[in-house]
Amino acid sequence: VDLTGWYLANQYTNLGQWAFPAGTVLGPGEYRVVWCDGQAGQTVGTNLHTNFRLSGGVGSVALVMPVGEELKVLDYLNYTNLAPGQSYGDYPDGQMFYRQTFQYATPGSTNNATTTTPQQGAVFINEWMASNTRTLQEPHGLTYEDWFELYNPGETAVDLNGYFLTDAPNAAPQKFQIPPGYVIPPRGFLLVWADGAPNRNSSNSMELHVNFALSRNGDDIALYAPDGRLVDLVTFGAQTSDVSQGRYPDGSAAIQTLSSPTPGRSNVGGQTSQPPVFNLGEVRVNGSQINLGFQTTAGKRYQVQYKNRLNDPDWLNFGTPQTAAGSTLTVQDNIQSQPSRFYRVIEVP
Image 1 (cartoon, helix red, strand yellow):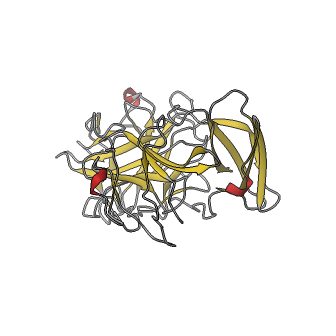
Image 2 (cartoon, rainbow, N blue to C red; image 1 turned 90 degrees about the horizontal axis):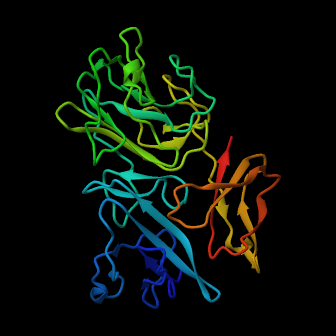
Image 3 (cartoon, one colour; image 1 turned 135 degrees about the vertical axis):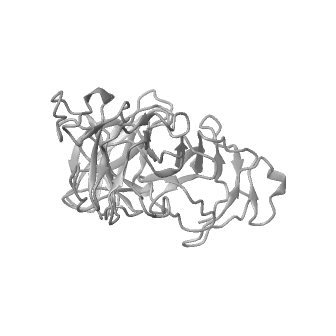
């Protein structure tokens, strides 16, 4: 891919912020490190330096390509709550849908989803559902609340007394302290209700209730040991209602959208099909009308979503889910007076 005429930006109001030098070519399967250090004058050959710096903790970076006489965002990352030493990106590499925080940065090589080194007493955040509308009813209030599960992969029980759970690992790592009485047996699970109702905890139930809820637009879940050591951390993006994500197999580094929710039980059947991919050859604009084509798998159902600005908090559904009859599916939209619109496609059950 010849990147001549392409750009990187850390703000969506200035898409032409930094241009790749003429003749910059990315070979098949090649990774290229770009230093975002505000020292563009240090660029020599393939040693690239931008004229901007990335913000620590919270920020954005966009890859921009020319389309006719306009600049269009081809790909982007919006990151939040990054701690020093962490990175954020795609996992697996090279797709636009599954993104997460990495504990080990790997500039110039494939992304590494390893979290904490497994050790005696290791516990994993194994599955979560941040938009539970009809899947699992909380037994006290008989309402549908956010939930996640913890998994003990070891051969001995883990007593969680004094451990901390949080959805704000940077701002409030000790947001909720687990009370006495919660022990995960060997290769066992603990169901945690993120319902903001810790008063529902009882010695008569092994289900835990914490003082926070999860955001369906994307969030963090972190588990800390009593001494403040990070035990596990997951970061997830926007969620589909009644679809869970988690580690498959249990306790592994691979995080997937799961075929069916299994709260308090072993995860099953992560989705292995390839995510839908926009085919740029099928993006056509005629006035305010736009035709979008994307690759599909026959029999799978897809939902197109959109935003008018990338920093809008929510993705909005464009129409209803559609079932693909073949290898491509095309939808039409009329953006009318909107100056911009961004799309994504998700596979739904």
